[in-house]
Each structure stands twice: as C-alpha cells, then as structure tokens.
Length: 112
Image (cartoon, rainbow, N blue to C red; front, side):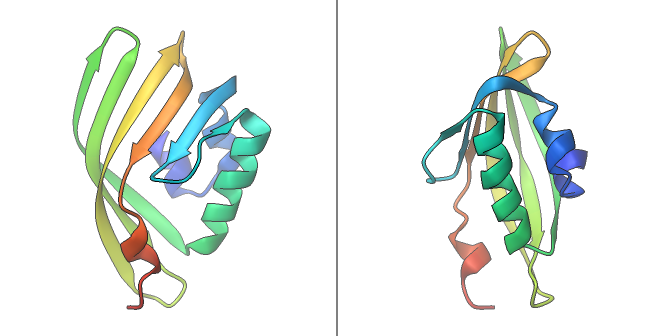
C-alpha cells in the first residue's frame, strides 16, 4: 500500500480499501467512500512533488494494524520535509475499512 502512495497512484491505493471505507488524514475531516477518498487523495497528491514512507514498526490485534514510521514529502520547490506518522488501519477481510493517519502536516506547507 505504501508503494502505491509513494508512486502517487491513487487507483492502486483505492484498491486496498473497501467501497465504503472511511479515511482521515491528520486533522482533516474524515471522508467516506472510494470516490470521496479519490478526490481527497488526488488533491493531496497534486500539492506535493512526491513522497516516500519508511515503516519502522507495526503492531496488530484482531482486525487492526498500527504502523509507525516517517514520511518524507518532496515539495514542488525542491525541498523535502520528513515527518513522523502513525497509521491505524481497521480491516474487513483483506481490505481497509477505516484508515486513520495521525500526523502534524503543518510543516509540509510552512515556508522552507
């Protein structure tokens, strides 16, 4: 999944989600359903030149997986910013039904 995100491949990313998935990125309001997520993620991908994730740790229990790591965002001005994140993924079968990203995204949009 992180490879799809790092490739800015919205359609591949959506393939990991249930049709009625709920997605929340940082403090943004949650969006529900693949079409709403497509719009939100596509808009975010346009705001960055690229990104790369490193997952340092995972833990799972039942239908939930927690991923902790760092993401480096490549800005359109050629600079990078690396931020810590924690993702909480809740599954139905092999698809994600709730995807919550805990991150302070403000440094990405702060002046370089």
